[in-house]
Picture 1 (cartoon, rainbow over the protein chains, first blue to last red):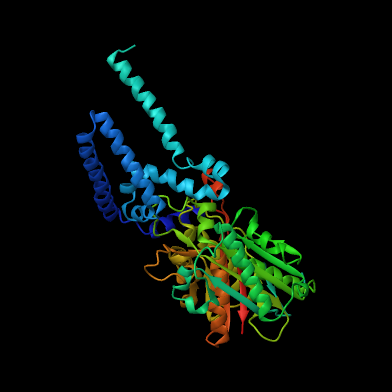
Picture 2 (picture 1 turned 30 degrees about the vertical axis):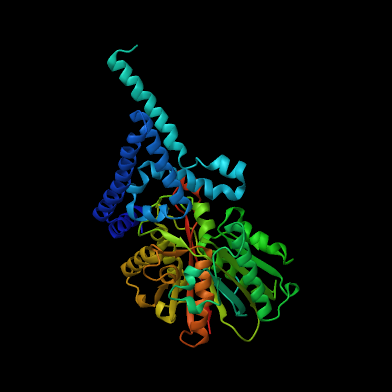
Length: 146
Length: 335
């Protein structure tokens, strides 16, 4: 059988992912994580003077939560159900760094954890910074700030 | 060509070496699966008190070897070769396990097909009077394989229905000329089959054509049909690969497809989170020496064909856009 023919056969016979179910779960769990973040923000606004400070507290709290849930082996179980609902919020970002840090601890703190903890999160940071730069450039051009 | 060869790729062993001593051990998850009672030993946990899963994998293989040797009072000096392989870079689990044995070591890499490759090579050495007794070993561990081929364990990943779950387990066996144990009568070494698939998340579909090619060649070489075997055990096509193998066989009007069983597809029960099924070099090994051997011993099966498949990819080749080269080796075991 020709490769093309077999590839077509595989395509026809591969189970389709349960898109609707996955979307519903992503919406519910992702929404819950965001609602929790919003709740923390509201509480922080009572304590902090400015909105920026309250936002910083919220982010730190959510990162802490994502890290604790990863360290206790719960976050990957949540993600199995929620998919992008667990990956997109900042708790998911905390998960990628914590998971890598835990995984590579076996090779030591310096060359294991230290060298490889951004192995998954690295691209997000690199392209996040890059995107931030270009958006800022665009904004400056449009508003005529040069 | 010598008289030991049949057709293009098959070797017939007139000496019919026997698997006279063997031991399988599996992790707790595999032990709870539908074939738990067929394995010789179920580990209480998946770390065995070791600091890293790599060390655990090595210990598992050493334990399997020790139990295999003890069972028939074989000492390492009685062995002429130790053939082993695993899934880790530079097959370090096998090399480390060979360190304390002091037996000439042949390390092989066949991914999940390692077990049949090792058995076939062992039988060749015995048939050729190069050895009297050959030790075979392989091991895999879920946590080491995830690290080697996929992502950190605790990462937020949603697995698909075609993903495999690497079996935590180890198996060892001694092949030699005794008057008990399953006889190894035929071996068909496979060629690389590459249908251009690139999805490392669906190795079953990639490997099915390799399993089919080796099966077809084996039947042609030996002039048999599938019905000549009580069980044809593939490993590890999983549910998706098994489906593709059936489709390929049906298209060529093969009969006896009810004899097909798949080690990867069987080892986990529903709700155990195995995705398409088990994989890893230990999977087909523990299913053969655990499940199949007990079927042969109890007389439920007299002749079985084991077709171990391997997806010979690496994380590097996947990222560089290479296709997945696949292989399948078959061995026939008889009561």
